[in-house]
Structure formats: structure tokens, C-alpha cells
Amino acid sequence: MAELSRRKMLISGGALGALGALGVAFPARATPWTWASSGSIAGAGAGTDPRWIWDEEADPLVASLIDRGAVPEVNRLLWNWTRNDQPLPAGLPADLRDFMERARQLPSWANQGKLNTAAEFNKSRGLYLNLLNGVGGGMLSTAIPKEALSVYYSKGGADMEDRVAKTSILGFAVGALNAYRPDGSCVVEAVKTRLVHAAVRHLLQQSPHWTGDIPISQEDMLVTWHTLPTFAMRKMLEWKVPISAAHSEAYLHVWQVTAHMLGIKDEYIPATWAAANAQSDQILPRNMGPTPEGVELTDILLGQLAEQTSPASISRPLCNALARYLVGDQVAGWDGIEREPVWDLLIPTIWPKLVRFREGLIPLPLVPETAWVLDEAVRKYILFYLTKAKETKIEIPTTNRPGLS
Image 1 (cartoon, rainbow, N blue to C red):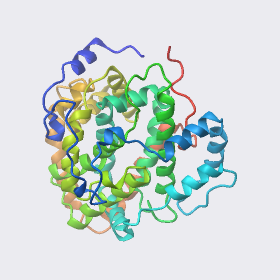
Image 2: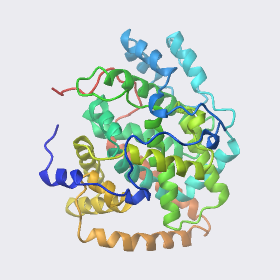
Image 3: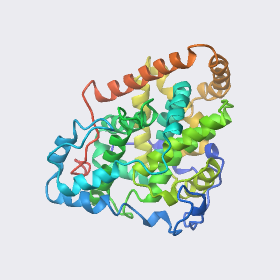
């Protein structure tokens, strides 16, 4: 592990108390699962704690692909599978093809009208969503021990630029105007991600550095899900961003569909924002805290963010303060984010004014379209920077992180 400064470790190690950015208390880790499945998309369920549920379809299949040495050829065949309406490539193993044909089908409850409305919402609110899902969600993820450890010790931990780029591919696909339309790519990226998750579950259990339960359980995926749409919606409401009921419902819906496509069972997918908030309040606190790996990953992520702006002497302190503003002092402490005396005071004052100014412009003609063009340019720049202009796609890993003794 890269050398961490003593100061950052002290910052993260002393973090206890309330989860400030999320507005919930930090209870004992052993809290039982009490979220009612009546609040789910399915409307009912067995009530089984999602900590002990994984992916019974994908897991044995991908383990078999790895063990029989089929993954390199599968990755080669899937490289050019990029559109939702594109047939699966010829030559895939029969068992994988059968699974993927099932996995690529949208759930019966998916509503294309709501998905189209979600695209309209993304068009006008892309700035907030990119900031909250990218920086905010990234900082929350490194304060989730199981997620931080999964990332650090899996293959992606060796090259965080590549790892973030591949994560961004799915996130940007969800936010695209054609996400679940025939010419979109969200189905493709979700199915590929589901296969990656199954591979990581299989591989990490073979690593001498992994001593916990099987990684990426249904609860682990739900925790990550709540660091994205649930966190983003809460922050936008906190910032007093005006959001219509139709846009709010549609934004939830596109992420409900995405959760299903990633293999989360319908009985765990919240049906409403109230149900999502209740579930988030139960499972995020019992899954969050500091780790040395999380501190190191945070430092890498903020360093990458700072490198995208200049001069560096200004950008890193600004990035530190922005991250602290988004996730709050508790999570920032767990992540080892240093305090910035000037920016920590300025950003909470300036940002609400910028939001009010921007929202005052949104109703004007062509503003949403112009905002989307700018936001799309930012997304493309981020991917260009992270991939160093190389074509990057989501691929199934065959090893854990190399180079660890």
C-alpha cells in the first residue's frame, strides 16, 4: 500500500458520531434488517437480510467462465457489443448467451414514458448530477469499508484512472438522453457490470488480503445505489433546486430500472422516494466508516480531480473543500480529507448563490439544451482524461490486484 501521511490517518481514525451529510445517526453495525418489502417495486418479499444474498444466476456462471479460461475470448467478443438493440455476438459460450439474453430484458414494470422524462430531467440538471454522482458518490464510496476494500484489492485498484473511467461509463450511460432507448447503451453497460461483479465475488475470495464475507452482496449494491440517486436527490432538495413531481418520479424510475438490470432483486428496490430514504437511513450507517484503503483511494480520486483543473496549487485545496461540502465533516473525516481554511468557508456561501443564479436561467429559451451540451462536453473530457484518449470498455477481470505481497 502506498505510504499514507500520519495526518490523514489521524483525521480518518478519529471519525465518530453522526453522518452529517446524510442526516442520520451511526448505530451499531449489527442492526437487524427491518426495511419492509411492501415498500419495494415488487410490493412483497421474503424479508431476507440482503447482506446474505448475492447473484445466484451470474455467480456460478462467471466462476465457471473464469475457471475454464473462457473470459479473455468473451471479453474480445463483447468488445464491440455497445448498443441496447444490438444482437449478442456470435461465438459466446451457450450458457453465457442464455444468461445475457435474459439479463438484457427490461423488467415488465419499466415505463418508457418515465425513462424519457428522466432524460429531460438529466438535460437540465446534468451539472448537479455529475457533481453529486461523481465527486459526492465517489467520496461516499471510499467511506464504505467493504466497497473500498473490494475496489482496492480487486484488479481495478491497481489503476484507479481506468477503474473510475469504467465506473463512469455506466454512470454516464444512465444519464444519457437515450439511456434505455434502442440506440442507447445502458442495458449493455449494466449487464457487463453485473458480470464484473460476479467475477470480483469469485476472485476476491481467493485473495489472501480478503478476509470478510463474500463481497458485493445485495446490500452492498443497495448501499452504492443510495450513494447515487438517493444522495443526489436529497442534496438537490437541500439546495432548493425546483424539481417537479414528474421529474422526481422519473429520476427515481431510471435508477430503479438500473438496479434491476444490475441484478438487485425487485423486493429490495424502493418503489418511492420515501421508501428509498427509509432504506438508505437503515443500511448506509451500518456500512460506513474509515479504512486505510479508503483514505488512500480518496487521495487518488481527489488528486485525479485536481489534475483536471489548474493551477494545481489552487485546484487540490478547492477539490478538498468541495468534497467536504458535498459529503459533510463526518465522511470527510473518515476519508482523510484535509481541511482548507479559506475554501471551507467560501464554498458553502458561494454554491447556494450559484444554484439560485443557474435556476433563474433554466426557464429561458435554449438554456436546458445549452446546459446539456456543456455538461456532455464535461463528461467526454473526463473520460478522455481518465482513459488517456484510449478506447476503454467494461471487461470481466480474471485476476485480483497484481503486485500485492
